[in-house]
Image (cartoon, rainbow, N blue to C red; front, side):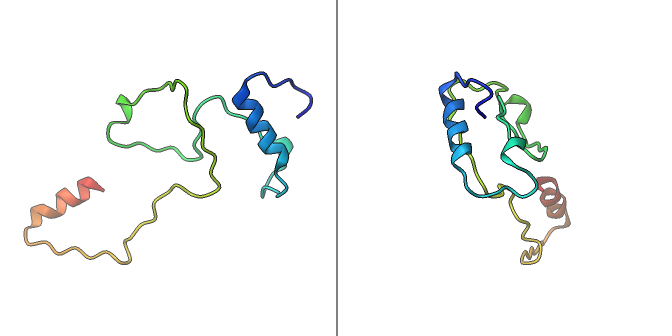
Length: 95
């Protein structure tokens, strides 16, 4: 990391955090890590209204997580009782 000069204050903080980590990341080393100028997601996704969301962020707040953001399915525990067959299609459409 000493091979490049970090000018941006937020990037410098992120580099300092990366340097201070003692734990190893499975499947890679610190040299395999890099900063992304933008929003990065491991998986692609879409949701209602995605097209209307801004594609640029001014003065963003940055959060680094070491947990999954994916919601787990409740299919095993879910039970739905319907009195009208038309309700089924509305539930499927929401999913």
